[in-house]
Length: 294
Image (tube, rainbow, N blue to C red; front, side, top):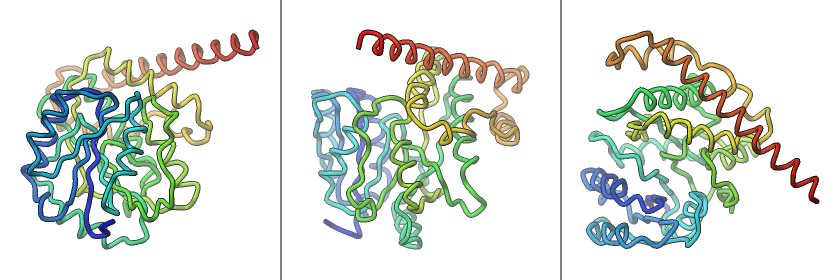
């Protein structure tokens, strides 16, 4: 296992158009100077994804598949097959910004040998929907609530997550968690075990936020399922409204909106809360039925 190299792991579920876009963005970086391997891990065998991987053999792209649904299954297979100590997990609906530099990433992570996992922020793409903008603000505020002034973190996002495999000491992602925010359970375990986590601007990635209202509600519903399975203390601040400074700074820099950003935010947050409540109610009802039949 190469200690001074990096492996990129990209989980996907047959989303070949996203994989193609992400690999193109990697191709325009200094990847070949500092990294050794890219693993595209598909949940199901997908000829389109496989063909795209063949188109990027110059980057050392390998294609593997798990044969079952679940982003954490894909992440764990990538963790197992990686030939490097540093593993960079990228969601398939992200791309690297033009200024992204793997040399800067290595310079940064070698300054913090005590850190187990690093992460970046999600950046808005040129095209996004109102629903996507609100979702972006929600993710950013969630990160910032748990980070201090020195960018030490207690939460990281799975779309841009770099781990030191040696420091994980055999820990892996929970394969039973296939809902939204699937990486959060591992992050919580690392935090509880007093591992150091850190946010780095050089790991910022552009996330696809061009989503519909239905996509927004679907994401919220999946996250609510996961939320319900975790200790309430782990998500105490997640239930609160994000700081208005975060909302205002994000929206003021994106003034495509012609009406009150506060009203828009509150409407979407209300939808989020309703969806979370309904998901919890549905899950609780299912559990009660199981107990009755048992």
